[in-house]
Image (cartoon, rainbow over all chains, first blue to last red; front, side):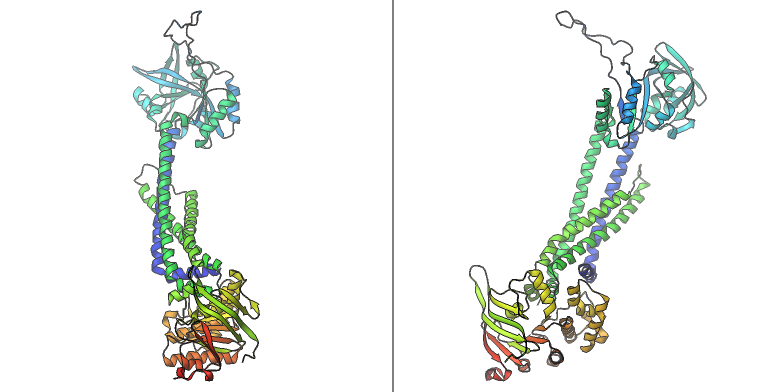
Length: 397
Length: 240
């Protein structure tokens, strides 16, 4: 306790010096919080945009590849072989695979889905579409079209169809309009019940979502699906979980991390640069604290000598300076976090994404700042504790 | 000469400085101080007075010889035990009063108690205030050291040296920076404390007048004791 009491009195006595270094720590921690919040917000936004319209994990059989025609001696004699229909292999025992995917730890939701190419007609307008068939509730767990509806309702029963805003515009269609859909020699008449805008032009302009049964019929895959989509609780665990699912089901599995390697590389590079910025900021903070405390130890040599002469142990002298480092770190973290949060709020209005200063970020900033303060104070503190009291008192005279 | 119970004893104490080529500052000092003694340590500059005081004050260790406080040899004690012993048995007064400017006057007085008990406590205030009143500084308890004159600050330092009621107070040129009148006041204060309690004082001084007012004088020249006895026995050349 004496260490803390003396540390406080030392800081109070060297008020100007204390305030200056506190300002330095505050600015450093504000930069730490601000940069972290911006990068975190940017990454969350990028991930939301990317993963908002696609599954975290897709489980789908390989496309059937035609076998080469071989002579008896083993020499291929046909160079080009047209693939047969259907191009995809059937998804054998997909219900069992769905159960296995659901049972995998870390999987939050699954959706068996059938998808394929089709043409949509309305009057003279004709558009190529990706026909997606799935159970409405399960699909919503993977891609939340209901939350992104701009018109109508999200319902996939009977002949219901939900399409994106861009496709609706191209077809000149609105909620309630009928839509003719053809795939190969099969044709159905669906009715538009909802229009969504999911923020992804590819999905908005191509997706035509209907019930699993409708899509199976149109795509000639009755009783079959093309893929199982899955959502995981922790997005960066997707690749590990995908490998586990592949091992469990024996069906090729792909995670969003594989599909979006460039994005992932970008995010990781961003992480690396944020870490570097954080390290440099903390180093600057640590050096600021260490240099001020080193000067303080020299300035207070005589006082330290007196403290030792009147019976203060080395341990308490050490703690006097460690407490000073800790107080700089603690108070600087609180003020810096507030400043960083305010700066984040100020630029959030002009940013295209949320800048969220989360409790976790504040806790990290606090912990790191206090640890930096104590770490930075250690060398000056040790120097103070090891001062020869007789020499220290003489040196002050 | 020393009839009172033994408080401090030095036997053959030597002190050298330097690595390789060493310089011996003290050459086998023997001396003892008893309970309630008032002793002056005199000698020219460079005679080793401050070195001797640092050894007695347990701020430094002898190269050779034995130091015992209340019969307890200190050479084998570790730093922690030495620190505790110093806080309990010794009080210090320095030429420069060395008050801590960030602590109030009363906190400066309480500092040795706080060091002994691990922190400032409210029950330390009463004895500190009583001592300040005895020093004529009762009204200045909550003031800052910078608000006090040099003489007043030195009186605060005397109060600080006495707060733990140590059996021995070491004073290094306690009046060295003070004018004659203030110097007399501070010395009278020390003598009064010595008379009213069993506290012994070892006062290092250049001031022969002040030394003559002590009960016993130890004269150090070139690191050796050349005289120990009553002030009356000091060589006449130094008595002018």
